[in-house]
Image 1 (cartoon, helix red, strand yellow):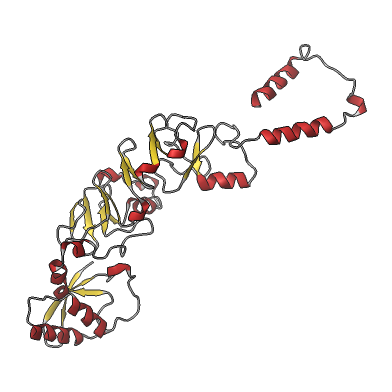
Image 2 (tube, rainbow, N blue to C red; image 1 turned 180 degrees about the vertical axis):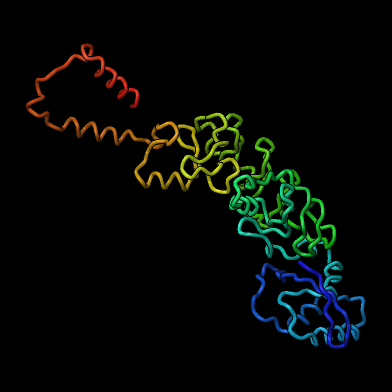
Length: 327
């Protein structure tokens, strides 16, 4: 975002900033912006302390500008933002900025590489694609110390409200995780035991001390605890589960994987845990049906009266014991 000087038709120097006009959640346009529209926006947020005659002259001067760059906000409109009520300023541009991961009105300065990114996921995706493996790294969310306001482009220490323009950079803000998000419908909450923010509403989850993660209330006293079961990678896609954005499934054996990976595994007729090989669903009806089929199968005549003592053949005993252990 760069401040520039633009000379109007009457020779008046006006500072401009390349800034997307996304108030009210609208998307920035890639088409030509009509001069009347820009003048109208400027008039609505212009400096009210000037006389109406001067203000009309400003509109006229703005209209005399030929071929203005796309999505420009003139500084003569900025003072009006500062004169708005506190609530109006806080909500300015809400849901209009961000990335595919989060809607927020700021970018973070990565302390590890000193680059600006919309969020830590954008940083991790970018650095994971670096050609040199030694340059690849992940951002530690708690280490972020500075952010840049997406509305006024002011760099500042981490805070919820911009120190320059008064915009709330995230409707939800966590000072521990340095996390911002305008989508409050996710029902964010910070879990002190996990050390990170979760979504879904605090009242809908509990923290399992042994498993080391927040689980849905439906799993309270209804799951097999495995120590730090969430602090591992998904056995299917190998993404780290603890802070993954995807939903997680807790299997009967206590091990975890992504829900979509779990359902894909079931669709492919794989019914055992990839980690411990225990059944992940109730297979009793299947085993009963197999037993019934075996009982209904007539033994071939060549084997009907044939017997063998397993004690005389240890290798057979081992096979039988191994089969029993798998049941």
